[in-house]
Image (cartoon, rainbow, N blue to C red):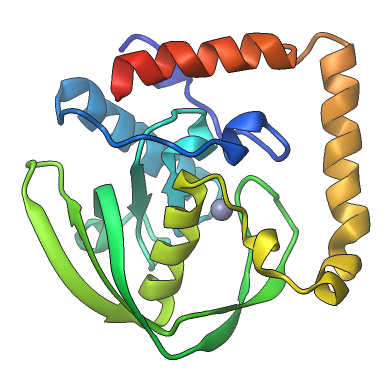
Length: 199
Ligand code: ZN
């Protein structure tokens, strides 16, 4: 797909961040190029995970490297059509999101997960993980369902970051008014077009 090189991380409240994505139909050269670009963007923005929704692609795909280090290619993981089938325990840790830069909050999530996904070779892999990787997978998998980490916060915790969130909303509205960002109808049409291509 010709638009791969122009993929960029979208910021909250881009509507694709609230979109529940459908499974990818196939693994091909376009997808591999997209994955390369997603890793590039993730490292550039100092993240450890990035979901397709965050680059305005409505399909079930995310990438992760818990080291956040582009030299540690061995730690790169690609998750295509992931499914989390088991959740155990509970853990609290601080999270942030490349679509909400600078905003951080403590999030409670299951500590251990059992999941499966397909890799770039089109092979299914199953795994049980805990720690940071389990957290990253849950955070990114949420994105594919249109869920942001802020959705897991209590109303009290949400109050603490409300001003920052409102700044993103005001900035979005102003850029949309100035025509820097397409209107909602155009963004929705783009999403439908991409969905028809990818899923
Ligand atoms: Zn995120």
